[in-house]
Length: 511
Image 1 (cartoon, rainbow, N blue to C red):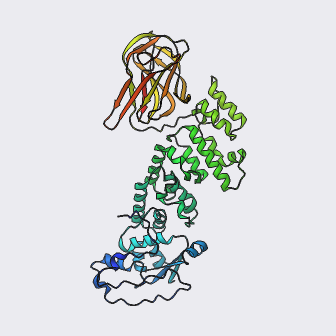
Image 2 (cartoon, rainbow, N blue to C red):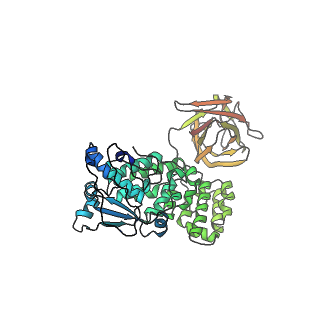
Image 3 (cartoon, helix red, strand yellow):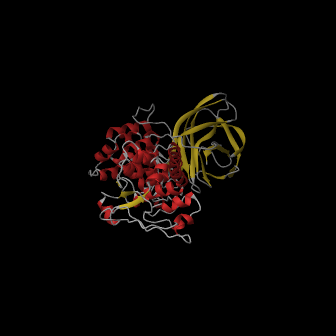
């Protein structure tokens, strides 16, 4: 079983050595000014106390007894070595290592085999190397939040796939939105450069620094882990990018994330996140915090923000005032929001299709009648819901005069803040029946529990059917969940739509 606690680089496993009648080996010297000859006091008949081959090999782990090679770790890292009392020397046995690793086999028995009794490993952490040796000697896995990434690196370096698999399993079990970016940071700061001497505050899983894990999974060639990480990012994008470690990723990874069609976040929030990243990158590059430098460090990433998916209010409150876009870009995007036909802009307008599971729909009316007219006034109805959902569209009634095309603007407004969360100028075709017809938003709109929203639809077309015998409370129930809508009439001019009758019969959503 993998331990959740971090492995101590200088700790000897007390289990086998503490058995009755066994004299434990002397502790290995962790720091020596000069390497002494591999001399050791004989321990008579220690073998008799070990009932199995596994016990005998485990007894030799990190022991000078019968050892014929030492590995020197931490040498050349002045600060780390000084803090730890000097380079750490770990005794080992060539035969055991060669039997468990093709890399060690080549090192000791290949055409260019070393005969040195001391081998320096400047790019390996002592705790990770001890975890590797423990596994080779005893099949025991001792990894934890502090050591899993360095152990995975070491297992790959020395071609021990069974230990790799344990590390990947550990990461998979502990993967969350609030630590995926932290794993990504480890990869970009440490494993890419081979410098694994990163302060522990940068990478323990239990520090919850933040969210995404693509680079490391890609670097370590772990497609299954990469897929799980990306899935976590897609499902909880807001939690991931809100975490501190998001600003530590490199530009290539930032672009790889922004290119994804499956992120579950409003584009305005994504823009705010990349501004935070740009500020951090300016600091890393020691650049003045100017609008021009933020634009410079963002480079291609800025073009991957899908500004056309924002509402005009979101764009005006954020990107238009950020100073990162040029005046011409701001004007062109405002024109895109406000005029028809819309001018071409150099930004992606493809929605991010982040939703999973089954589409749900509720209908608030029990009966359909004829003749509901339109004169440019919006039909409106207020609602709340008991849980977090994503609304993707409305079902609207169509013409009573046969097949017809309608132009329509649909919106969802947060009632108290009077803030438009999503809107779409579009159209739909109806067949003259009393059925409802789907009208969809450009992207899902997040609806929070117990917050009042207004659903709006402004139709341009002939008289339509309408609903009657409206319900104040509509429940959508599945074996796994229960979603409850409460409806309220909207004050002011709402074209007559109310709880009892009118338009906007259906809300289409995902939980």
